[in-house]
Length: 121
Picture (cartoon, rainbow, N blue to C red):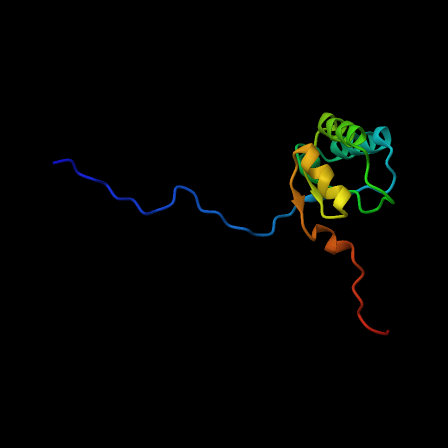
């Protein structure tokens, strides 16, 4: 008679927690300038920025970039030494862009930029 080994343990445990991750808030959509600035950051602090995961936040722009420009930025940032891993939550255009790029959309990631009202001083 064959022995059946019943293993009810999952092979992987999924946890959702906070991690320290770099966030690039794009204020001016100048791909060459953004890539050069990142290249300089990586050169100055390679242990901090080299191969660092980076969230791209287009919330500082009046409109979402087109797909070609966003792809050029992703490629340039990778060449500069960082790894774009997601887009920050934004408009429906940003959501569509994240799908086109094959990157996840991190909901409410931009909350750190929201001004905290500490009351009257």
